[in-house]
Amino acid sequence: MKFSFKQLVHKNSGFVALITFAILLIVSGCTPNDPQSTFGIGGPIARQQADLFILIFWVAVIVFVLVEGALVYILFRYRHKKNNPLPYQSHGNTRLEIIWTIIPAIILAIIAVPTVKGIWDQQSGVPLDSGEPLTVEAIGHQWWFEFRYPDLEISTANELHIPINRPINFKLQSEDVIHSFWVPKLAGKVDMMPVNDNYMWFIAEEPGMYYGQCAEFCGIAHALMRFRVIAESETDFENWVDGMHTPPVLPKNESEQNGRTLFTQQCSMCHTVDSYSPGSYAREITSQDERWTSWVNDIENSVKVSAPNLTHFGLRSTLGAGLKEFSAENPDNLIKWIKDPSKIKIGTRMQKHANIYKGGEANLKDEEIEDLANYLLSQKPNIK
Ligand code: CUA
Image (cartoon, rainbow, N blue to C red; front, side, top):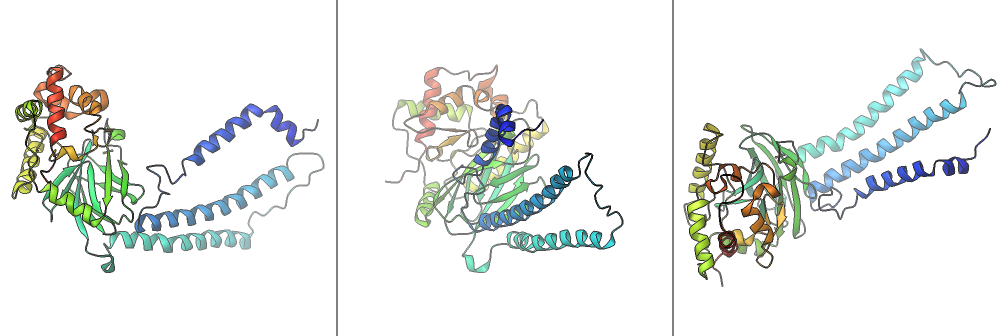
């Protein structure tokens, strides 16, 4: 019995459709438009790494086609059949063995050159001709990112503002377990280790929002540990820096006023909102350390835990470490977050340790939760 290729496809059309769908699904992951695609290159480090990937990819494709092609050919040509001859027996052929040892060695040597150069460029620090670098200390916590700008005396969380076309020098740390700092469009991932600092740098060439994600399994909310990089023009960045050093607008109504009182009573033990005055940066670092020590010394009962700095929270657009978006016009997610954070993000330490969450949901009236949200949304620099 003989089958043509056409008949074969026809007989197994369901299977062929499934394979085609699977391939399309995999290939669709390569679109540079995806917010976390490494192919959506946003700067020189990302470009160097993507070029290296493409080089290795095509070398691998050629090797795959040649090796698998030869294998498939031989399987069919010499399959067990009456008239088929026994293939040439090459065991112990020194010349062939030398050839197939040397060829892979040459291929690996070719790949090694740009790989070592890439590692060197990334790890030897910012090149002198790329401009004055900005230093950022990024600290991983279960499960959010703290960002400190030691030279600008700013401490913030989960939304990292950077100027475009200026190298950003990162010192990566972790307060608890191993996390990994990854902004796919700007650079490959680098681990954030407790005790041992790691370093990396990148440049964003275009203004925009770049998505980041923790890339090392770090506990129950690992998949929900995200952040965003907001790359902006030098002027916009300076305005943001000035704003972060300016006190917020005063409460405009009774709701914001109530919210402020509630915040001071219930939230301010862990969340700072006043890191805008001289000296407040040093104070925040000390407080953050104290909260951590308090928690680590009594993990079950501590009433304090390391927490994101919420200074000028009204400038932000995401909550729960880049998980949900909100705005003054649409504060629903913020209200839901305050009411029952673990509904949005499993494992939040806020819910476990803050007194108002004894028993689960916040022990607050709906109006009080709205007051808190209104107060947080109002936290913006008082600049005309
Ligand atoms: Cu932090 Cu995964």
